[in-house]
Length: 289
Figure 1 (cartoon, rainbow, N blue to C red):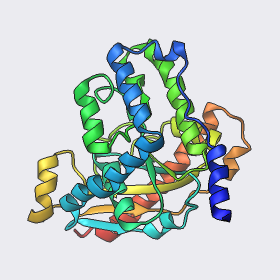
Figure 2 (figure 1 turned 90 degrees about the horizontal axis):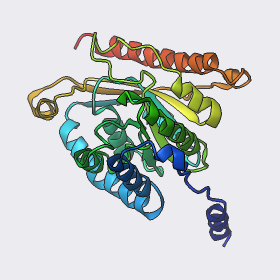
Figure 3 (figure 1 turned 180 degrees about the vertical axis):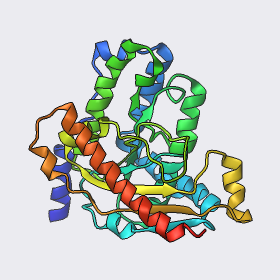
């Protein structure tokens, strides 16, 4: 009886997903507006529950079949120790298209806590054409959301990014089992070796400052951008895929500072330090291989 009343209260207090202002969505092309509205619908209510079911039972399976001989996971218990009713922001290095897909497969297959995944994404391709919508569906079950248009070169479309930032902060603030994957580097690092990291961008610091989610660092190594080669390597002896989960990061010291770019950058830099420390653990463990 008590549990049913509690669930009823939660439903009554549920925060409705933010929608963009008229002037914000007006800057998008017709195709981009349709792509956004489709993904926005798929990331709420019953549709999100259905997409999450497919992620857990279909999406995670094909990733497992492509990596099970190579997969090495460290520190997963640190993720499981987090509060399952509060959002978790996963911050990870970024070298492959498949970084967060692989992390999500591990979470779905090796933990039993409730999960609702969201991966903020650059909108180019994924939101401006039907083939991009299809990839978002097949690869991520529409979890590549919310979209950011800052890379398009069209300054006007950055007006929409104001909405995406508010929506992302909402996802990181709600008392729901949201798990948000974020790359502080802002883009894939295509140069150097697996332990070379790009400078942190302040955007993730802004989101954390405004929303105060649980934050956990992750270091990923061993994944490439050539999908056929990556899959064949699972049976032909490819490089081990290593995923390191770190301890939840205590960022309280930053919350008393001014809400300025400098503070946001300091938060982002701290996160990259945590990721670099995990990278050092990987170097010590797997250098000989």
